[in-house]
Amino acid sequence: MTDDPKGRAPFQVLVLPFRQTGDGLRYALFRRADRGCWQGVAGGGGAGESPMKAARREAAEEADLDGDLDFVELDSRATIPVVYVTGEFTWGPDVLVIPEFAFGVRVDSPELTLSNEHTEYRWFAFDAAMTAVQWDSNRSALWELDHRLHRAGRDGLTARS
Image 1 (spheres, rainbow, N blue to C red):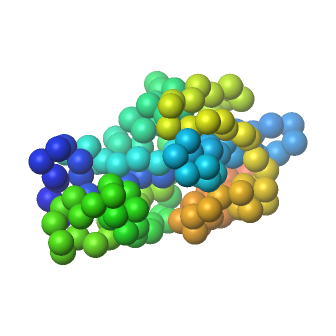
Image 2 (image 1 turned 90 degrees about the horizontal axis):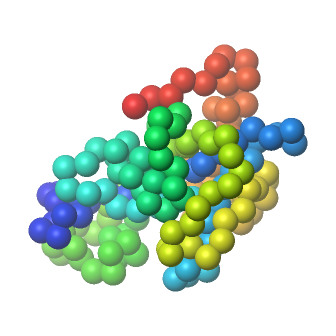
């Protein structure tokens, strides 16, 4: 797979903001303006971008999460039909699916700023987040992130970049 001429790399990222509250861990989900479904921050990689760099950029663009934030690279991976992402066979007729790389990002403030890609956001407890999201890839990444964060209470969470 190669980058397309418009500057789009053949991969997707998913970013799940999380924060610790007095009531436990909470996960931010965003309602998509075009489909009405709940999901994490999602977007495509740019030409020459690594998945981590794309995740940082998408988090800044869609939720104004910028600066020296603690990103957690997850092992969760999915493949997504390219036509669900770009609406066409962007990288030719043989590229049918593209990988999605998942990340968590620790935030301190409950206030996020939305881009025009979303109509609202909410902070969900884990079980409610698992029910709210539409895509299995979001559920897998949420499960992994939640498990890592709870284990971190014992072992410490280290970000991978």
